[in-house]
Length: 315
Image 1 (cartoon, rainbow, N blue to C red):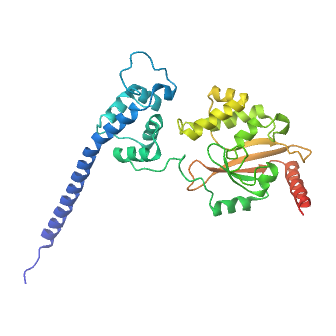
Image 2 (image 1 turned 90 degrees about the vertical axis):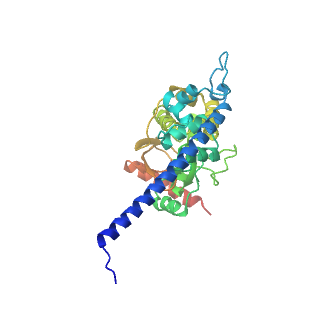
Image 3 (image 1 turned 30 degrees about the vertical axis):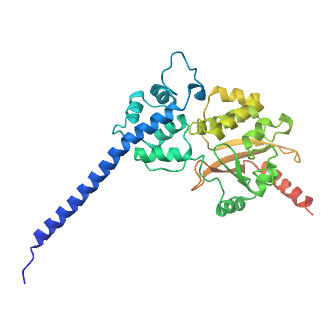
């Protein structure tokens, strides 16, 4: 029987691992190298189909480029001209998901095209918030119900109402089916507050509160510029409300967070002062649970009276 040298065995094993690692890197390098020309061709073809008018720009005289120029794509996407040029030339540069999303919005890529862009750039793809499921799971609805008698709601970044609890529905009457408003639109808190006449609006001190809400909306809009659903919502609400149109044109931004708001209810004699607190929701990008908590005993008593009136009115 021949003795085996442990050192020699270890060396051979190390050499095999090194060879395998080298081959894997070499294969990955060749794949990346082949992707770059495809990435360049894909970006050029997508750029050629977007006209200056599509993005609100004047066409200008003597345009030889079909569609947008490289520098226009860079400007609209908020990236450097050199960086975008190198990306379109297929050079070996790093691209973050945030930057690719900005380019995708400028080029108006549909979801399959966006995913294709990520793959060609060698970046892991996650569904964009606009395309992510907006269905509220049973456990999230259970959390809302457990918060009762505190009003609670799930909003997405556009203030669409995705789920509510009973206390919220008593304080802010909403359609039984949140997806059916009679206008063809999803029930939306922003739309209600701007379109409802002053004397019927549940939010007091709108001149102070609404600019903050528009600022939060604009902060989220920065991630969705060019997306049809967002652009249509902003256009429609601007047409429906001069107040919203003026605030939107102001360009202010604000973060979601903890705010004190004052409400009223047609069935109550008094003001409800409540703190709104935002909580993130797992697996629901850009969605949040907003909970309204009384800031004083008068408000707590009014909420109790509202619940008692509801019980008496039921058969």
